[in-house]
Image (cartoon, rainbow, N blue to C red; front, side, top):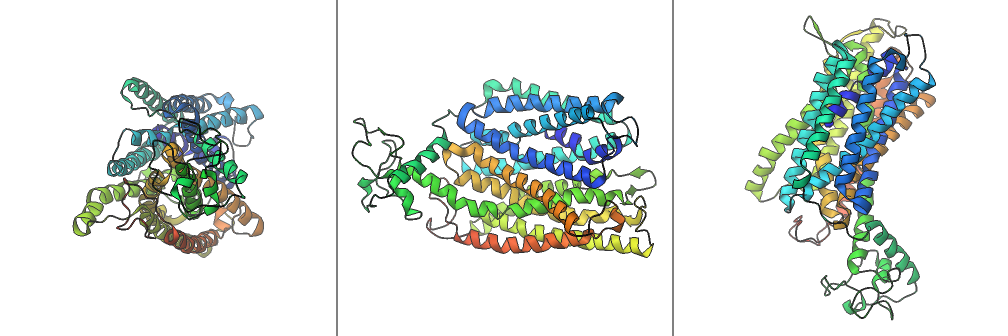
Length: 520
């Protein structure tokens, strides 16, 4: 499905400009909104999976929705009545409605598949080390499929036929749905327990009801489920929440279970909520990465459209394919990390980088990528000024678009560290009942990043003259320098949050010699 998604949407900025007569910045903004929605929707899919029906039904429904999405896009490319008739006609409301329906179904498709599949795959494994390897290889396959989609499929769309390109995407998506259905009897399906979000609400309500209670230092004063260890008191962080587990008369039934569920919670439920609260600062510290990645992804396409994209005398590389460098670099880096660097570190030091350390390394590479983008754009802008071509929006700058490869490579290396690092961190640290939601947390980060990128570009357009419709008269390098400053400040904030974070004590997660140690 990733191959289908990337092939259908990787070049859609160009499709909107050429066939729907969108202005370049408007097309980039629309795609940022779509990317933001498709990044946020996996969290909704994860919540539905954890709370109501499980992963598999959500994955099946969403994969079918994605198939209809690609089919509709194929129809818009193949039937002239479904798009503007010429380059000077704006799309009608019905034409836009059909286009937006396809994009909305695409959002639904990604919402139920992208990270639910990851959680479901990890559920097939019991060992944390095996799960880490699975996450790495999931991203390798994910990015490789994206590479094929953005290169081969996009080339077919640009050079042969949009109908053929989208048709291939439809066929691939149909094959994915078929393979999913054929494997139904082989999947391990963990049973659903109590709605985890209701459990969170119960802790808050019970704590509020007992807000005037005195806290005890005795373990027996707090309720533990009969199936849980009863010799460990609640932690002292966020002590006010411990009141939710304080036992008072009438809270516990004769059989030892909770009699009044909105007045008493288990110590484990209280600790689970504390863990989620401790994660929030770290989660917010990774949003700026997504803002920079989203902005670079959309603006680099516009840069490529104004540069020399020829590869040899006959081949013209599609503008949407340059960002494939990021995907290729991520795949290669992940492979090297998983097969060479991490095992070597373990053999030499009996230690491998923790998830938080990997996220930090990724953030450092992200800063370097934004600075590199600024330098490349500065050179492109200088050439435009030398030729006095600022007033010629269609003028192709005599500078190879392959200069965009360097910043994209740096972004790709960074993604190889921080995306799998985030997934591993959330999956290990989240409560057991929220495993699907844990993998969906990165979806929220990406979503907020894309939406914030759209907002950032809009603010820059309104407040400055850096981003006119004519990119040759722009000051795009200033946008990249702004992102460099933002990511640098955010990196400092991340280091502080990571230093203060204490990993939860879990027999399956080895993060330090001392489980009480504050560490990255």
